[in-house]
Image 1: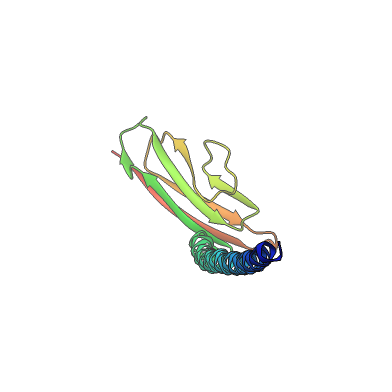
Image 2: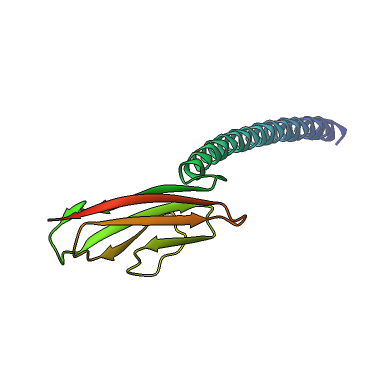
Length: 153
């Protein structure tokens, strides 16, 4: 009887050592995989954040260029023109204008109501050659004017 139990105890100790080694190796492998996955997700997140910041700064610069092109903070008449510049009596012509930071605008002679806009066109029907005057006024009362001549033939 004693001879039979001795090998079982050794076998149990060997199986416990094998199980312990398996658990240690498995835990180490899971830990290493977890660290690798954590590092991968973190580095991708960091790259995306840096890319988003770069895109945001480029968008801000582009938006600033657009605001500057539209007059920025300055009070100005951005444009005033006729299309076409000449017509026959009774033909329709478009007068197009754009203003920045104006509180009011006035068109003389006036055919339709006008108001401050970055880009707007109104139709006129001149019977003779006419000089149109656009006057813009800002909040402090400062004015700017522009003229366009529509030739009627």
